[in-house]
Length: 143
Image (tube, helix red, strand yellow):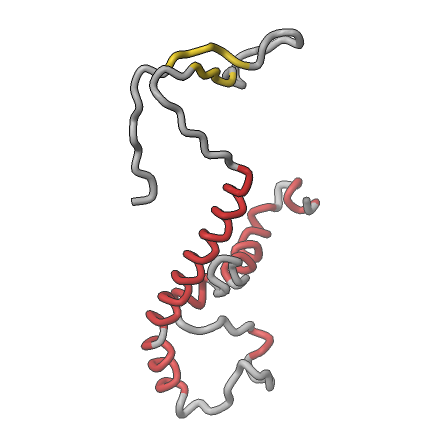
């Protein structure tokens, strides 16, 4: 953690932190939030008047270029949503990799883990039960 955040000067650091957050590409969308909102990358003050690949020196076509990029923003947003869905799928697959699906039937005896908020001693059981299943519910997830 930076020493500037530990002092009372964090208010002065806040704009630069927000700038970095808004101009850093997200893992899920591969786009910056600024780009998804405005349709173009932010140009730093240092880059104005200098030759950089991102900066075009043709000011006559600037308005047309901006209008064209704004027309393409919806396509960028759709592509970002597709990437985000694919990312969610990968995360879900990774998270559910070790899940064991169990099919409990009416009449089975099951135990339940003790609530972690409850103070469990060293020699106490880490489960409660047994409980008898009296009816089976069917839940529809991810509809």
